[in-house]
Length: 70
Image 1 (cartoon, rainbow, N blue to C red):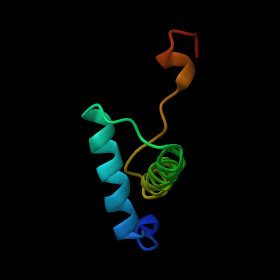
Image 2: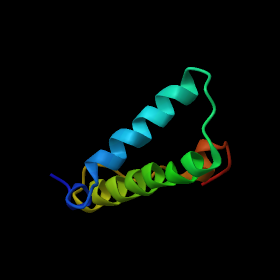
Image 3: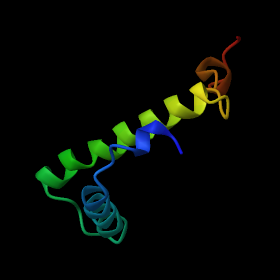
């Protein structure tokens, strides 16, 4: 298991998921809920960093993704 999962507040992650589900169902989040969702972005960043460190994944070359020469 990745180290980034060791510090996860699973109750908060569940609340964040519910906010996302509501939002995708057409119920926009309140400003405080929108701010809370940044935690998911930070978790995703940490998971990606762990995946790179473990050799499971590499960050894509953004230039190549956007059609630019590498």
